[in-house]
Image 1 (cartoon, rainbow, N blue to C red):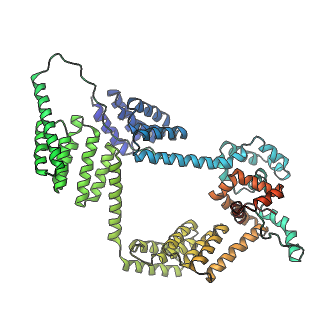
Image 2 (tube, rainbow, N blue to C red):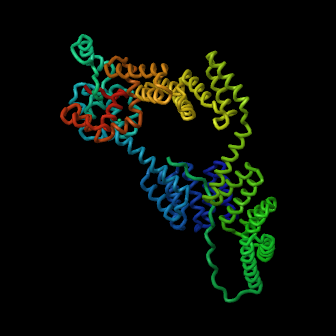
Image 3 (cartoon, rainbow, N blue to C red):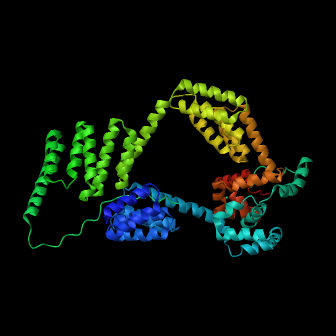
Length: 593
């Protein structure tokens, strides 16, 4: 029958290849053979979580912590299972307990940060959804002449019930004009469609044009997983239960004990020589220790360290391989095996074998997840990426690709132009090509033509970052935002461009005028119904708008503007509040007379 160690190794192999059910079966057999091994429960918890069986994962994580309460990995498993079950507060508690044991554990810290961000996101969604959880929400809608009729429509009632059950789903219904009207009733403000605005403001617009008023919108008017479970890892196996005292010790056992003691003495001498940088002496002591005791791989890893310091990288790798090969048969601490693999990776990296070093570091992390090894892995991956990018750089070819892209753009072959501009950036990135900002600008123009507006904004942002006084970068970004119906954001972009690139730039001034015109049209009801819906939907999906509308203070301010003119006058004296109100006006969320 296979041993627990062999079954565990098979389980790890299945886990790494994505065969999670098979991994669970192997870990379960290993647990039957060694029920006090906390690592086995930890690994089975990881496999169960990967299969979305979070209840079983939680049970195994609890067993891991019970068997080894001072092991940080157990709390990592516990937190991951909590997240899978939606128990975010429990997950935070689990991760914090792990960090109390190991404050430098990057995996726990990262997982804790992800959960806290998830909780904040849920709270933000709940703030908007809280509008619909009020006990008098149905009464408010029934008492309003415009929304009362909606209550007779089954699909409308179902929509509200869905939002009450799951507040985060409110974003799915923002394009429904009835939902926009519901927002107005619940917030106590006038949220109008384009058709309603045209009806209400039409008479005032006529009066203003004939000299009977100041216009419809005078100055100063005002307007809301966690991380997938980490891979199975091997940690030090639970120490074997102490043997029962024996009445007599055999001669052979006495000899073994004496050999181990002599080997330890050689190791101590080797360590002392190593610290003095007397590497030849250290090698001799470690080699003698290996001859006296072949059950302790620390002598081998220490000798490997000496070879590394002496520059004998091939010998270092050879010793590391020997330690890894011998480790399981002598039930070596998994941390020791991981250390040997990390040392091998260091030697491979120094040899310039970066891909081999990456594979070795990853293998080390499956044995024991160590912050130092993880950092080395990240560093060498970045080093390899930079090396490949550097080898690919060719400024002359970058210029050729840019010219090809320009030719395709003139022929309106925008996908081909994007491909050429992307290749130009790979061949000539900003750090070697001072005119890379122009390529980002050109690619942003292609994305705009293709309707890939978010990508256009990203490229324009890079262009602006590289060349803050390049007017075309602001024009590209403003144009993309304009077509996204984000007129308020586009207006800010054009204003910034005029400040940075020159106030006399006609293209930026024309773009700014278009934005102001659209905003005024929206506030005066001159936009089409479809345009108004799109504008409001974009605005309600904006986190900044959601934050403003979910703020209890701002909700009271908006209500005061509609019902309490005296209080509204006081609010207008506060720049911060007026800036938020103007944001709502420009975004087209509300119109306040």
